[in-house]
Length: 492
Image 1 (cartoon, rainbow, N blue to C red):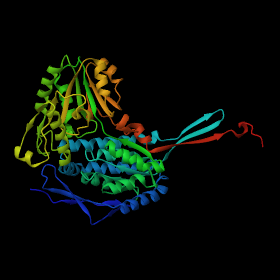
Image 2: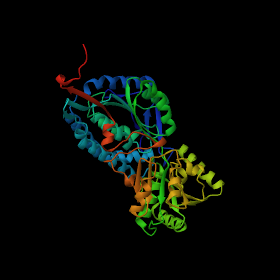
Image 3: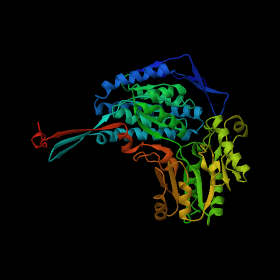
Image 4: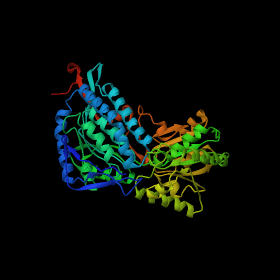
């Protein structure tokens, strides 16, 4: 029996901002069921939110760091208390299994707590005494931040921006994806109520809202997670006012399995399978193409399929036996299937993985049975493009140099992984063009919020997480105090 739909509002100046135009969000498991409605805000609504954030910044930037931390810790507790309700809502609107939703909230809280613990030390002024006098290197708040977040990890990819922005004295207007707007809005509301009105604002909508958030002259910084093509439009929109940017974009992350990888290591093989199919493959940093040394290729494929068949159980996100839920939306299903069909049409073998626990439910929802693609070529779309769904190609390589060449043969460079004996794997990792390379693990399993995360090449610019993720929301301000008696002589 379906639950009653919930209603989400925008938040502007600390108050719920109601509009008549509402967009439904369906349940990917039961597409006929509407989980809730989010407002479709206009460009005028967005301008109002930006104006409020701009005016509020004047006073908020003067708040003490202790006050900001105190407020953020209250917000963290609010989220902890509401985690069961929020996780359930996220699984209903997104499709990810409940354990995955709970994990996403857990990572969000971990980052928020780290940011609270570290921000005071990270942004404190560096005062240097020297022969010519004294220099203060300060870290100033930037201003209004526009945050635009995606549907795959809507909560963690919003809090990754909210926490550092507010803790360093900025104000924010955040726009979630229309494909997963509900649970993240609940989180934003829980945070916003602990801060002065106007510090954290929330709007929903389509392209016109995004255009305003990226072009408005009162916006000083854009924090965006999403597709590379969208980022190109954002950069153009922001060019006239030279805005700060943090862009975490697409990835086509390579996993290199070396000849000294222990294919009998069941735990390692399971980690690799999870790194391909967690959240139904809808993670920017998931391993999307596997390269295996030709000497162990056949054995590897056999053991990989065996491990995948043990771990992958497709079904209802609220079934505790399920490890893979539906894909978030029908458009994504069609895109992923087109890549699979293209590979199959070119002669590749497509092997289905795991078990479908409820065939009737499977046919009702946006489900895809995970697959591995064998025999694809390096130039095939299934290898070149980011699948962002439950399929992965496995290709052989000849030697280390060949593996590095294949891995780097991409416009993307978000994350990568190397699997084998540590010394050998690290040697290879140093040659991979990526923002992060993990050894014998990949994707969320190897994520550590204490260290910076972001991409190279067309996978983005700037870093989130770690101390760099805090500094990214500040401007460096140098204050020089010279000994005036020692100033160089300048003729009057």
